[in-house]
Image 1: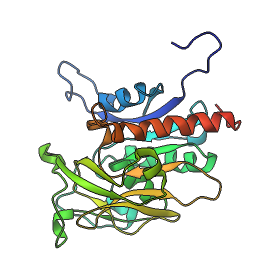
Image 2: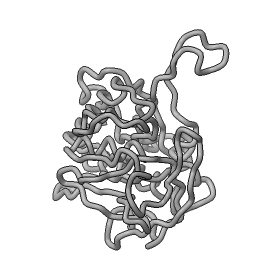
Image 3: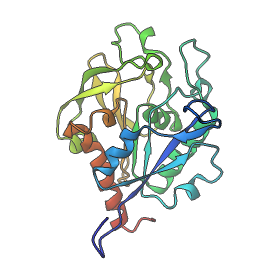
Length: 256
């Protein structure tokens, strides 16, 4: 709790994905959830996470009106048709309702200038929302390193080189980050207005930012900073940067 008269913590919306009936022991009906590490990473920097069920969103701007930031989390693959892709045997966990909700929410966040941190699948959603495309299965690409096997709950730790002078570099304060990856897809063609700001040794796009003269704070990372943020300051710094961007927007008079 803040002291009397102190500013309330920034509210950050996190779309929560659907859990079918039986996914949680003793739950006869489905639910909505998000891994705890995302919430804990925001709490450590004084932000408050609010879960937004990822169902069809009628008015995305109205949904985001109470919030000062948006965090898009990891999860299953985006429906390939949304970026012009065809069927692929390795595509998994597709949830069309979640796709529709998150694409609508990120477009609304961009429209109103809401600070946005997009993680793993979230970065892919951001890219697709702006007209970009994805590699459907990285092991199909010659020379591509293993970046994890989500269906087998297998992660990979590797270095990511950061471009100087970017939001990512400013946030983390390092030119090379040690990152935990857990994905089998990645960015192919960049969406409109996005620029690559980090890459792994095999050339995969590992982070993107929005080239924006209006100064909107929009950052996507392909790895999972929340998995190591509790012991790695450079990863925790991403959540701090999001919270700082929320505070700056508040001071500029942006809507609560």
